[in-house]
Length: 172
Image (cartoon, rainbow, N blue to C red; front, side, top):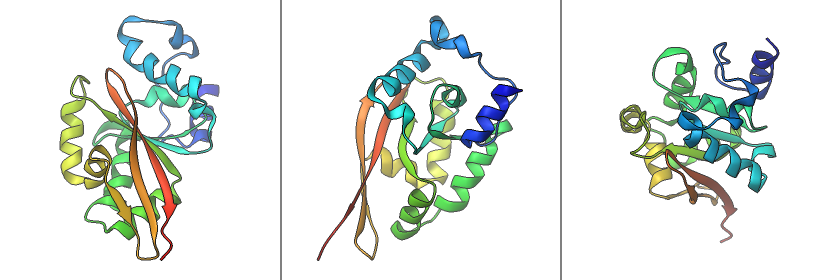
């Protein structure tokens, strides 16, 4: 129960009872693609930031980081993340997307690669949520007020690609 409360306190959408044990980082094999990401986040200090990270079905991330983890999946116990992004990102303007990113303090996106067994689900979600394509293409969003958000590729892993949200203000 302590783990569930910890996940809930971190803002995981939703918290989930069937989880990985704390010692999972010591494991290899099927955990390796996850361990790659977690080790990088810890090594760079990203894991201790007060920011949000969006991921597709990578719920173990919440156990090993202080980031607010948004798990997006169209079905099952993780569908709340899907609903949140669908509601705020489907057919949205740059201004609405920027407002959503700022409101949720989204600073990182962990997008699946084609090697990821869940990539087919991600492809379906990407059709409904264009924000994911904008992240992958490293596009720039700009608000009417001159706020600019750019998506920067930080690191490629076996199953994921990590992007960072870079925020700037354009003076005219």
